Length: 386
Image (cartoon, rainbow, N blue to C red; front, top):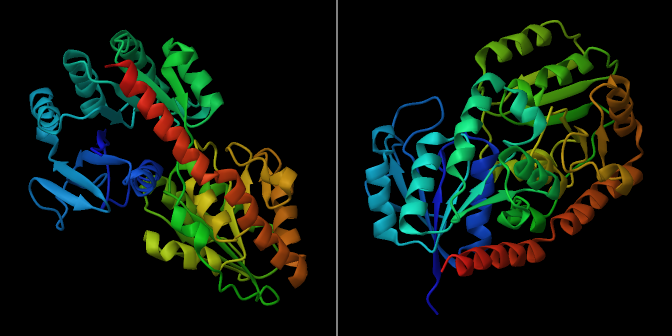
């Protein structure tokens, strides 16, 4: 059977380290669906905020984890060049991964219309209210322009939830039939990993956070919380520094913490290292301002590491299932109580909590059902545009 072709356009992909969740979503997408579709990826030849070409790539198509990847210099992200790529691949579906990545999205929308190719555009959380507030002065005029472009019948949209689909439909004036709710795909391998966790909370509470260092991830809030902790804490921070000025503010707070609080910035964490990192910590702290999906939450939970997160994510159900804490940012005391609760939990109860995290996460992610949902949506779009 001949596989249908999906051509993915994304501003960043492996071996890039600084693009955050969208890259993780696509890596997991390829892992889940590479046996069902022939997957091609067009992306940048350099990392975010780094103009140096990746050293490990070659000209032309590269094989990367089951997909064929074409890395382009910024000057190659032009309509005529991208049209040649589409003519070469002849995809059954074009899959874009940002509304605001105009260097890819605008040309591919034009190409999809001129060549009568269906295009699915994943907003990746960009239409969430809190996300739109960031640099709104740039986003509002862009969206006014963009809305005029997407009236073509070939253009479809993906939200990661029903709520996000409603936002997309409202903001962009999209018909409900043109928007598909498809959750981001979590790291499948984490769900089958076995824990080597050893409970040493009697000595200190080991806290981990993994994310881009950016105001929206709210690391500063987490550090301010630690000022009020009177027991021993080791707080390990992983992730690329995206905003240097924000990181300087974080460092200033770190310098004021009492001696019972140890904070170490440990840099970038490779995917292969993540499970061990989560597994060796007692709790994942992530008071994010907003999150479209939250791959780091999924990975921590899948590893059995309980989470203390804001309630501005799709993971608020953990309160009801009693396998973590999703709390309002307005209630700092609730975060402190949650940290104390983890610290004081007896070993048997805490072991049950870790087990519960893994079980409930596996049920929530429902990987087999999600795979069927993607295939059903993709096939529907392809059939409609024939």
